[in-house]
Structures are given as structure tokens and as C-alpha cells.
Image 1 (cartoon, rainbow, N blue to C red):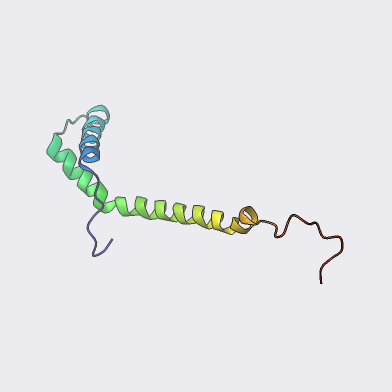
Image 2: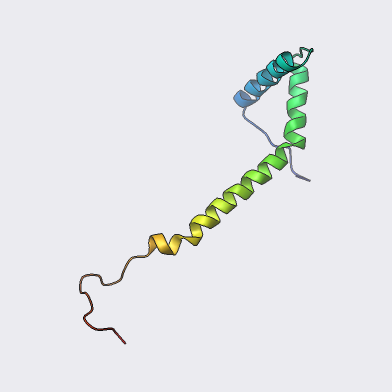
Length: 91
């Protein structure tokens, strides 16, 4: 995201993410880290890996919307003048 600020998250999500990173380090490495190191790790993830995740989410959303838009005519079509059934084909 050249020229744009890194992805930001809410204060509550940031707090939970920092706690999660600390727990991961405690359970999966021989090192315990504090809030500062976990926050630095989170900032790195948001700046470096966040755009990749964001771009994939946008591609998934675009594919979802294109799939729905392609079927719009099929789901949205209503027969015109349905009351009288034509007895012979109209020219």
C-alpha cells in the first residue's frame, strides 16, 4: 500500500491481538514477551502481511459480487403482462 498508511484496527482488536501474540509466544516458544514486543510484532504483521490479506479479501468479495451480478437477470426477471396468457404468438 505504497503511499497509504498501514492497515489499522480498533483499539479493542489491537488489545486482543497483542494478548494473542503474547500467548502464542508463551505456548510455542521458549520466550515470553511483553506488550511492547507484541505490539511491535503486530505492527509488522499489519504493515507487511496485512495488505496481502486485504487484497485477497477484496478479490474474494469481487468474485462473490460478480457471481451474484451474473445471475441477476435470472433471479430478477419478471414476466411482463402475466394476467392474460397469449393464445397465439405475438409478432
